[in-house]
Figure (cartoon, rainbow, N blue to C red):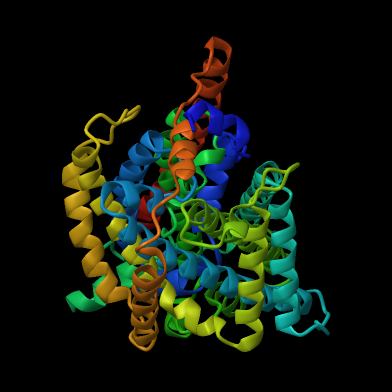
Length: 499
């Protein structure tokens, strides 16, 4: 069967995501509840030195983002790192990566759903009410909501994602202005005063802050659904790290500024550092309500959406490649969504929440996600050696050097970030994945139709003059927005240090 015949006969994912949607998906996947828990706890314990950890974490994702931007432009396919690894390294490595990615994302989705239930309860408390609904019921309702959103296709998911992120940014801005008067510049110590003497302690704090940048590559997993991906993907992954840095740094600055010095240890040990800091500073009422609204219906929602969208695309692609049941590769005839895969992700997440297993899966996330990143860097190193004729619309600076450097850095981070109590479960998952490949997939060749469909998806339309002008205008707006938030956040810390 020819490529053109496959293109006509096979249903295909719809290219509908704009640059704006790609940026909100990427930043939303990154800016979740972690910013208001582990990341903030590390930041407040370091004081002004938190900006050093934040800059290091930013640099740890900037170069990798560019590497993923190049691979995403060259291979804009559903499945992201799985699609890269199966071509650059080997099919089993791609499967190994996909299993780990899917587990990590489902774990994050379940954890975010439970975190939503907690913050929603806090919001009701601030409003003078008590939630009569069990947290598992609330978390399950959230999973069902996002399964429904993704069932109706990538257009709906993209529009909702834009709404969630802009709501979060809007509520955050209102909160910043509300508590600006409560910032005490005496809380900002000399720049290097908060750095621990032990190297391992500093490394662990950096890892805690870096975790609030993880997920920077999310959008490449939806490569088959992005408009003009050869242009859009690199631009989204150039801009997103700067926005994430700016948002994280601004929240850290305000947290440090409102936390009384004699309450730092209490706030850094709290499960909700921002709520603890506001209580310690006597900030109650409207600011607390605004922050909880932003976290629950903005930050949390914007993370949940990609956690359903991303793994369902991996599952869909693996089904097309013949290593998962065919039913998971079905597309909705109207909405062009991999609806069976979406429903499957939802069912798994609900099972994990109600069985109590979600805590274990969430603890496995760091190790699983690090494996995926390291496989991604290896894919970059081997991709052009294996496919020297591959078209490369955009090139990352010093790409091979960056891949080698980050392979080493992320290997170290994996050791520092791993939850040792969850490591046995990670090893069982890896063993199960290898067993699945050797006993179920190894002797089953990838269908030729899958190869031809993939080849047809790499035949990309070039934008005409009007479309290119629109793309450039949208990019300029986002670029200047990213520059402004980056400069404001950096300037805030500089001001805090000088005053």
